[in-house]
Image (cartoon, rainbow, N blue to C red; front, side, top):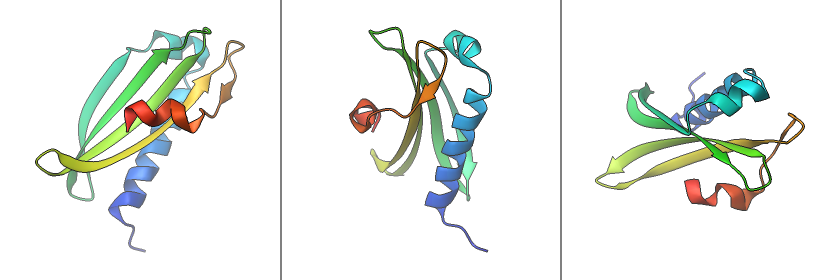
Length: 102
């Protein structure tokens, strides 16, 4: 089965979210605020950045951003994330919470 680059990038983003969630809320709070790495997906270079942002109400927003440059500064962005609630549970962010990362 042939998968598209977009499918592989989406799979990578979801796999990163699962890996981060598996650390647990305490360890997630200790992650760096920003961590980036360059990877190759289907022969294309992508930049993977994980953001950990503290929200005003003591929750955390964790975002995985994957960017593929196509031509000069024009490219494609894939963004997924989750919220670490005050009680340590995870929830989906409101779509507007991810806008700054796209």
